[in-house]
Length: 282
Image (cartoon, rainbow, N blue to C red; front, side):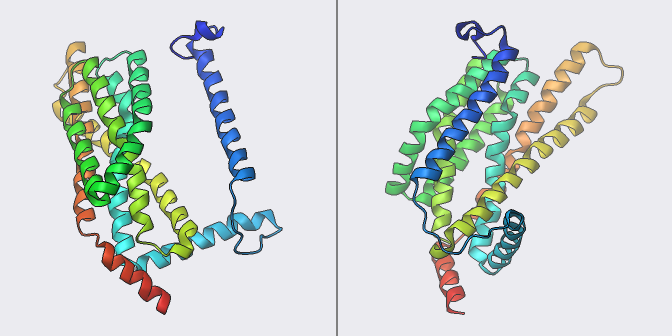
C-alpha cells in the first residue's frame, strides 16, 4: 500500500501508511480472538472480580519472579546474556531504516529491504528450528549471533542498496531463528509448572532490551561527529562526517553481541536444571 498506493485507490503514501495501521489493528484483533476462543487454557487460580487488581497483581508477580530469578543463577545469567544479544538484534531491526537514510538510500528501497527480511524470515525460522534439533540449540544460537556480528561489520562498510538487500536476506535467515531458539533454550532452565510466570518476565526483559542499543548507537554517533567534524565545515564535509558517524554508531552494536555471546558461554543447562530441582525441594 505504501509503495503502490494507487493500486489500492489511495491518494498517496501518507494515506497508505494510515490505512496500514488500521490493517495491523485488524490483524492483531483477529488473531487475539482466535486465541481467546479456540486456544484452551487450564485455569490454576480463581480470577479476581476487581479489574484494578490485575494491574497490581501483575506488578507484584513481576517483583516476585525477579526475586526467584536472582536465586536461579543459571536463569539469571542466561537472561543477562539474552538481554545483550537480543538488544543487538532489536537495534538492527529498529534502526535499519534510519541508518540507511543516513547513508543516502531511498526510503522505498529501505521499505523493500524490510519486506525482504520478513518474507525470508518466516520459512527460515522453521528451518532454523530444525537445525536446532539436529545440531543443538546452543550451537545454533552461537551461529545466529556470529551471523549478526558479520552483518554488523559489513553494515559499517556498506555503500550501495544492493548490499542493503543482501544484508536484509541474511538477517531474515537468522532473525526468527535466534528468537525462537532463545525461547526454547529458556524453557529448559525454568520450572515447568511456572512457565507462564517466567515467560512473562522474559518478555518484559525483551521490551527493555530495545532501549539500550539505539541509545548506544546514538551516543557513539554523536561522539564521532564531535571528534571528526572539522572547524567551519562545508556542506559536503558535514554530510561525509554524518555518514561516518552513522557507521561508527552501527559498529558499536557489535559490543552487545560480543558481551551476549561471552555470557552465554557460561550458561550451564545441567546446572540450571539442578538449581530448579533444589528450589522445588526447599
